Image 1 (cartoon, rainbow, N blue to C red):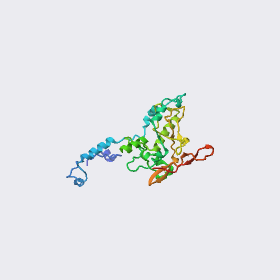
Image 2 (tube, rainbow, N blue to C red; image 1 turned 45 degrees about the horizontal axis):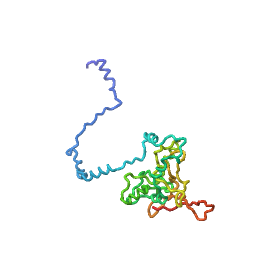
Image 3 (tube, rainbow, N blue to C red; image 1 turned 45 degrees about the vertical axis):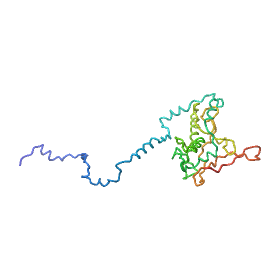
Image 4 (tube, helix red, strand yellow; image 1 turned 90 degrees about the vertical axis):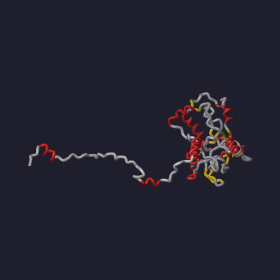
Length: 285
C-alpha cells in the first residue's frame, strides 16, 4: 500500500463544498407541429379563417364615427383649462352695463319647467341616454335608493324640433338635464371658491329657465350670477339639489319628480297680494 501525500490526505478528509443555490438551465424550445402534438387539430372548424369584407367595412366606419367620451379633463390640463375660462375679477365691473350681455341672452334658449320634466325619465325607443352614462346624476339620487337610473339626453327646443322634422339627433350626444344643471353650478361655484370670475367671452349655459311666472320656478330656487362679477351666467338656471328629486313610475317609465322644488302659483284672493307656493308632484314623461 502506497503512502498518501499530505495533500491527498487533506482532500480526502475534507467534505465536498455545498452550494446554497441550484443552477438551472433554460429548457430548449421545441417546435410544435401537427405530428408532435396532434391535439391542436381538434380546434379546426371553430374559427372562421376568412372574415367577410362587409363585416370589416362596418367595423371600420363605426369606429370612425364614434364620438370620444371626453368626460373628464386630465389633472395635468386642469390648470390650463381653468386659466382659459377664469380671470381676476374687475373691481368696477357691472353686468348691467356690459355690452355683450344682451347678445349672449339672445344666443341661449328658454325652457319651461314642464319641458324640463319631460326629460327627467329613462330613454325609450330611439332616445339616447345621457352622455355621462354610468356617471349620470340620475344614478346618485338619494330618494331613489337602488332604483337609480341614467336619464335620457336633454335636447334644447330647437334640437327637438330638428329631430321631429328630420329624425336625426345632434352629432354630439349631450348630458341629461340634471347633469347640465350640475355642470353649470360646478363651474360657477368653482370660480367663486377661487375668488375669480369668468372671461367676458365665456358663457357656461345654453338655456335658461322662466321664473316668477305661474307654474314655473321661483327665482330663489335658481342659480344667478353676481352683478359685480362676470360668472358666465346671464339668465336664471334651476339649481341642482339631489334631495329635491323623487323616484316614481309614470306610465311604466322610471322618472324623477321635483317634489322639493316649489313652483310659483298665484292663487285667487291671496292675502295682501302675496304669492303662495305649492309643491310639484307630477311629471310629463
